[in-house]
Length: 459
Image (cartoon, rainbow, N blue to C red; front, side):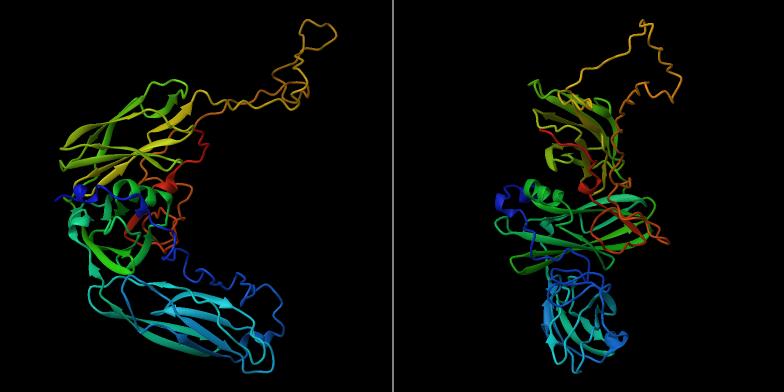
C-alpha cells in the first residue's frame, strides 16, 4: 500500500491541539521566568531594587525535589525545584537550569527569611533514541547545586509506510528535502518535533500551515535545505495519546545526488493576478514543472495569508503540467505559492501570483471630505499660475506618487523573509523559521507560513 493510500480519510478531529509540547525557548516555558522577565508568584525583574548588594549572593539551599527516574525519548521532561533561604534577611538568588551542561535559562527571585519557594522550572524536550541513554539535569543558585540523572528509554519506531521519503537518500548540495510523518491514528491528536544532527529545529506548532497540511494531507512535514557535504541525520519524534514514536532519515550530501525540481513556466505569467469577485468565471492557473531525476509526484497549491491549500495536482515523470482551477476565494494581496514535491522528497516552490481584486479600491480620501475641490483657475487674472517646477510653492498641490506593487517573492526555500532569524556571524547557512532554536552550520530550515507577504486578506 502506498503512502497516499494510507493518508486518505483523515478525520477532521485529527488537527493537532496547541498543547502538550513546549514551543517557547528554553527558560521561558509556561510559568518559567528568565532573568529579564517577571513572574507574579516567585520572580522579579532584575531592574527592580534588590536591597543590599550582597542580597543576590547570600547563601541559599537549592534542591530538585521531584523528577522522574526515566522518560521515553521524545517526551517532555519536567521537574520541581525548591529554593530555601536559611538566613535572617531577604535574599535574591539567580537560579540556573542546565541539561547535559546546556543552559535552559535562569530565573531571579526574592526569597524571604526562612522561606522555601518553588520557582517554575522549564520543561525539556528529550530526543527520541534508538537505544537507552540518559540526560543529567542540574540546578545551581548562589554556590549551591543539585543534579539528577534521568534515563531515556527507546521510542517505538514509526511504521515506514507513514514515513516520506525513503529513509536513506543522497542529494546534491543546496538541495531542499520535504519530509513527512503520517497520522498514526486519524482519530487521535498528534504532535511532531524535529531534530537534525541532534539539534531540535521545530515542531508542529511553528506555523498555521502545519495544522492545515495535517488536516488536508494527513501528515506533518519539515523542509530542510542541505548545504554541507556528508551524512546528516533527520529525526522526528511523534507523540500520539501518550505514546512516543521515532522516524529517522539519513541524508547524504554529495555531488551526483538528487537535485531539486524546477518550475519552468507559468500561465498566466507570474506577477499580478487580476480577479473579479463579481465575475463567476473560474480562474485557471498552470505551471510547467520538471525533475532532473524523472520522479515528479505532486504540486500542492497554497494561498498565503489565508493559510489554505487551494488544491493538489498529480504530476509524474521528468516533466509535466500542473493545472489548478479556482472558483473563488482568492483574497486581495494574497499570493499563490505552488509546492513541487518529487517522489524522492526533493522540493521547490515559488511565490508566483499576487492576487489583485479589481473591486477593491484603496483611494485615499480628502482631508476634509465636506469641502469640494477648488482647483486654481489659470485664466483668473488675479491669481498667479502655479509653477510646477517650484517645489517650495505652498499653493502647489503635491501629486500623490503612484503606489507600486511589489512583485511576488521568489522561491520560498531560497529567500529571506521578514520573519527570518538574522544570520549569525560565523554560520554558513540561512535559517528560515520562528522556532527560536540555535542555528546549525550545515543546512537551512524553511517555513512556509513565515514567508507569507504582508497585506490585506479580503474575501
